[in-house]
Image (cartoon, rainbow, N blue to C red; front, side, top):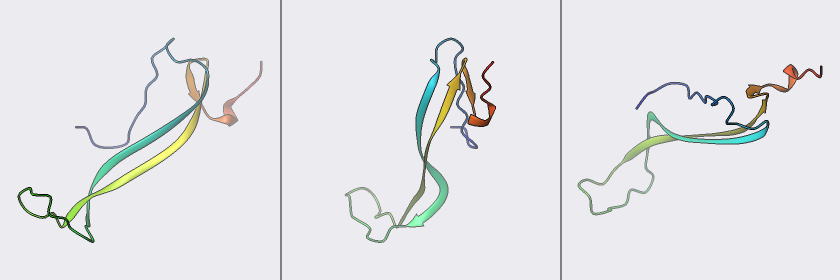
Length: 75
């Protein structure tokens, strides 16, 4: 699995113009302590887990390209 900044690429002609919402959930390499470890019947009781990462937002597609609102020009 690749690491680094996520990139979303649009397939030309497939994505319609409009407003889109995204949600990204991932686990980082950083470990955090589990406050109340539970014995789930597997090997050892885990005392830490990967720190979760969450981000959401919106973007606009115009003429098949992701744009920022400042870039909108009416010709």
